[in-house]
Length: 225
Image (tube, rainbow, N blue to C red; front, side, top):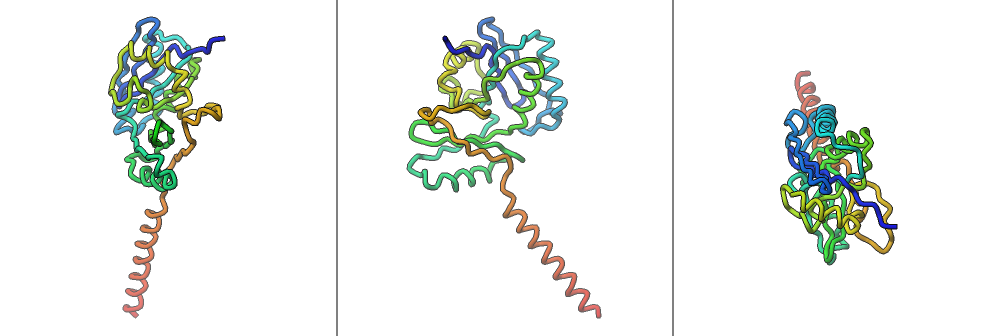
């Protein structure tokens, strides 16, 4: 039996969400206001969800099998050569420390001769998935565009490209930010996922400043006696 493919592709841009159903030659973009999403951070998840649900109703987009693609402009990547496999943990952590997001999610994908660390804001796609599933949509995956040959770094795509991505879904379905059972022979992704940036160095700095202030206060009290 042939594997069922997604019928709807949802392409997440910086402040746009574009819906593609290639079999109907349908493509419509929803502009997301900065009161909902600004600088890649979800400011108002309720407003974002409301915008998505309202758009689905307005455009009469029926519930179906769906794949969500995270465009390159809203993700961050770092290539880690397989020759540096022994330092991968350190390099990934350094990558996380320099991501300008409050709570990034990072996953490492194995691609040809390197590991590709990809970071996203999970809240963005999670709110959209919740809005879709509440309407009966089935989510087949959340895949970063950077690992899809047809898209890579494109900031926008066409219906024809969306069709190619859907037709080749079997090749990318394990390059996924959501849970998928991964056959042992595939070896395409690795579950290094971090929801929060490490806060150790910042905490120690704050503690040091606080301790210094206490010391200064004690000295001032002693001098007043």
